[in-house]
Length: 254
Image 1 (spheres, rainbow, N blue to C red):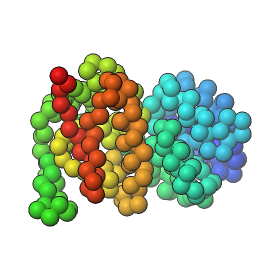
Image 2: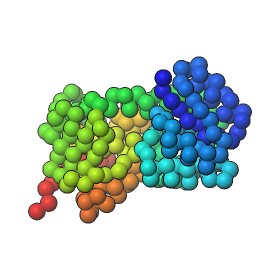
Image 3: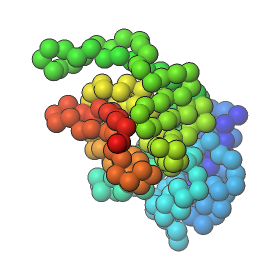
């Protein structure tokens, strides 16, 4: 049974999430403040954490920021605000997804299941070869095995992704990534040279319609680049393709 941690100070919201979790066969624990949530998250062995941004004391953003220093467990934010700045900030500090109040428990748990499903299948590398159309528009996908994909490890000139252990190394240096950042990098590196639109990245990683989610993808890409660059002095294999999306290109430094 998968374990969820809910950090929510509104008893009414907490109660209906807890009841729905039980009906969906999840084990769930609830903490009502940020400090308690952080302590529980640090040692509880949870599969996913649901955090309200507007917590008393340590708010949800602060909790996630502190948690990300030690753990990469998936985090979904609950927010009462529908402002883009709050959503972007949540992603900036390492959240994997967010949902705006009011929301249905069905929608929340659909997102939870999508993230956990990706966790389960992440030990198997699923890559594709993409055939670009002549006009640069939509392209067809077919199963394939790009160069550098061997079993459960993706290796390029300088990058190594151990899919089973969920570890990333550049020139032998370990790179710390969140769950979603790891999945995005795995998709791009597994299809090295292929141009993926933001919508294709979103669909491939989140498993749902990516329309209107370009900014979400951009924020995650920004943080992946920062993490890779910090691990290997300016290393940036993720290339922006104007008007199209992103592709992965890796070369050995000389």
